[in-house]
Length: 131
Image 1 (tube, one colour):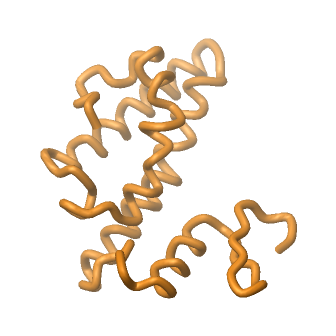
Image 2 (tube, rainbow, N blue to C red; image 1 turned 135 degrees about the vertical axis):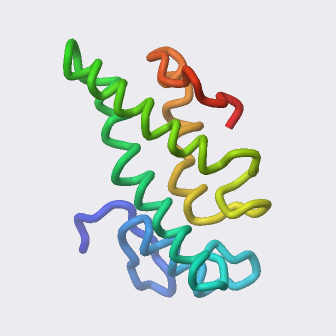
């Protein structure tokens, strides 16, 4: 466990892995829930968080760091998954509607970390770039 990143310490006990940490925080501090109460909405939040982590991050990363045909393939795939996310968000501010939640936290890298790279690589063509 010591080699895992990130690590969250609470009461001198380590919690590892991003999604595990987020769900732990959601269970400990109930004031501003990260996951919805309803089981279906909770399942959908987890689905979109995993989709972002498993399907969006790899092609976006590859579209920046790979070269040639591999980069072009990654850029196409990144554009496709970003379009899926854009269609899911529609006119909502957050995946859960009006409140930030698990999927929004999982996807923060899209706007924060790779916002400039997305525009430079031309991946936002056809997407609403305001999100």
